[in-house]
Image (cartoon, rainbow, N blue to C red):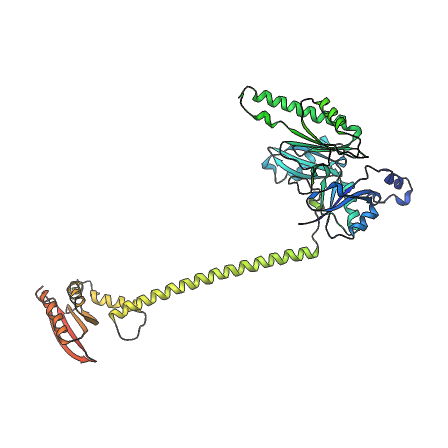
Length: 451
């Protein structure tokens, strides 16, 4: 399973270090604030065990990063950004990212040119977006780039809280409150602002539920839609640094909304780096650049797929050509076999043309009616009924005479053939006969006679 270097900047908890640097004089005005921040980090897979994190400053973090090969995943504090929903239309999807800053510029305090926007889930005419101060984010990227560990992803801390559908998560964490709402939005604030933000969040949920009940209450008394009221899971881990207890959190929450559907836990919540709809700030111009080895691997893969496609194309075409050649060979053999039934001896050159020429001769070729069909209709059954081989056949349209060369086991068999033909009303004349290797060959001249 792939491992990640989970990194979370905690400068907002210890601002004194950055303030001291800023107050120290002009010679350090350009010091990257991330080089003087406090962090917590962990080598992890998708599921983060927050109890196992290591705390330290930037130097300790760099020492640790030097010992791991996994790319850093920066978890950005919710205080540094805004996550909200905006209207979204499918027909605008091609230009949505470009138009987004100007769609929301009237509702943001800073100039949109100073903000970096990223887009998350799009659903039911709404898109979840996030924006962050561009200079602050670039400082983070620059710090990790300079130490040789470029950021692979930049996720939002409260969106790492795992939740189920129709569920919101609240986490009281070391003087902060993190909230991940069921629509993917949320916030992270200091404890001093907890009451204000919870008031807005829980009151809005209560109003939405009342509106929903008003819409469905008169439709169907047995409808179970009410069971889908939003569920709140509230995590209040105990510890020396905890400013909230379960009792205090319960009192605050139920004072704001006494009907809230909530469950309280005194442990850390499950965190995940693999939440499907989590917003990643490493997009657009900040997307991680592929290393030379990765690009080489990509080109090798593309080259390999291209070569495979060419070989597959050639193989299919060669197989089709082979199949056609085999079918042609079978057809030619069948044609030659048919030709040999008419012309048993001699060299075979273009049997189809020869058979056509012979057929034209048999049918006359001058527009006059031919008797060949009538003659064959009587002669063929006579030959078939006897143990006689037909060697050659020739028809004279001018004389209306059919000449046959046959081979039989005895002269009596030849004579029997002649007699049977004459019994059908034809004239059958034995032109000559001779014995060849215990076989008798004879030539017969057949005409219409009394017909």
